[in-house]
Length: 385
Image (cartoon, rainbow, N blue to C red; front, side):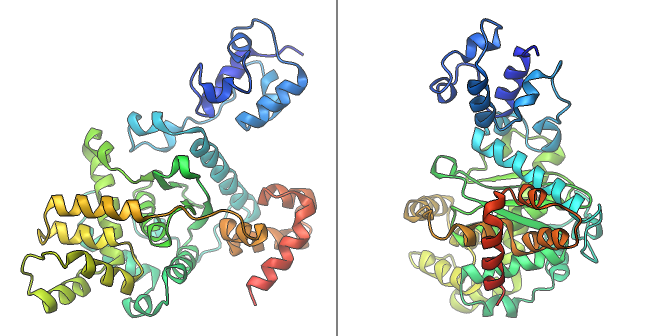
């Protein structure tokens, strides 16, 4: 069979590596020659290249490039600047998320088990007030402020919000994006039946909670999105795309920290006088009560001109420096349950016991080697008891 050099170029580009990228040339020094048709890899080299670029070996023998949708088509609101910067790890996770999305469709026979899907019921016009959208979201999720205030910590908060999203038709997956990709907090993939949110588990739990609601805003406007720690790219967007990105951050803040609670809190303490050196301590206190990030509180203070832009910037920088990346390791089975979610894993096992999929297919749906499945099921049962 004839190896198609153009497919090698396509696979490299899809994986997020530019021509001459040292990160891939160090493993495949003759890659440029292969892409020009000057020589060809041995089959073992081709297998390693396929593993590096996360494509099947057989794709290199296709007569032409596969009909694979471009990222630009999925993330229509983001613009080329941030899309061009997406590193290989994030591109791989995007493809992995899409595989889980397809798995959800197949395992559920094309129908979301949620009785009401939030992205179908709530479809706000782009001109809608953020206050109105936030109230509708909070009401739809069915999580009253009293319940939120009663959660013991941020870990509990994330788990409870994740459950509320699942009941509302949105599946949440997680992965450790790695220190080199720490600027990316998560992303969402829109689908009319199975919208998906992917969260960076390396971030603090409060930041993960914020990412949930940032990406939910994208999904409500029927778009996919990426949540980063820098919003400078928003200035490069136009019209509706720009407004959607602005709404994403504001909606997260308004939903997680209702204005009435915020106003009562700070009016009682300061009567809305301009806050001084105590502001960071106060922001931390409220953030702890609601299990949200301090930056969310500070953004609301800034919007009300209770702190200066300089104070907001300095505080955000100081808190970022305090942040530590979550350590890896630990029990891999509990990690898989955290990453995939109990609902998705349970669904896959249920379909296996219904004889609708094979044991090997079960491993494919969960992206886990079949030899680990029995033990994964044991840990899943333990986590539910």
